Length: 143
Image 1 (cartoon, rainbow, N blue to C red):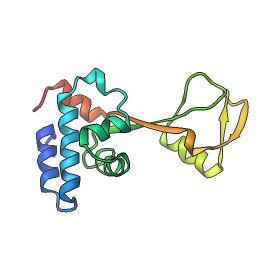
Image 2: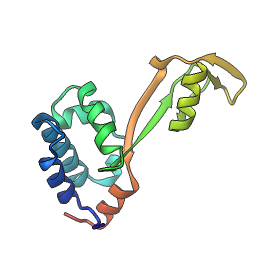
Image 3: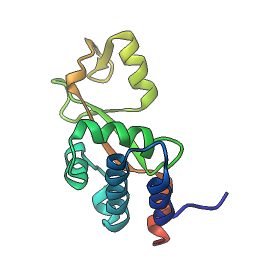
Image 4: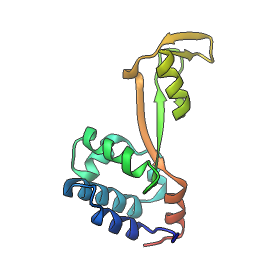
């Protein structure tokens, strides 16, 4: 399989029958943003920033991001889950497996495992960072 480029990913998005024109537009805008923005600025991409780039609502864009840009097809982004609680100064970073276990159990361990608290989804925040593929494409300066 040929190694993708940002341009080839944009082209695939443009011709993807499964996407609406609105989805195509916002995904291409985001891929172009990832390509043209300095890598240092892409370590912690917020949903608000993605919404600004795509000129669309956070909810609609996030669904597309997870499905298309965090998935296997065009894996350019990795989600970062952070849980903010009243016991620690810094947010707790969770991976997807930990988050799934916490949601299933309904509890999260805080303060280095000393406190078992009811999981509150309102305290969970998500941002994105570049995937290994995106970092590779940027380091090669592939256009």
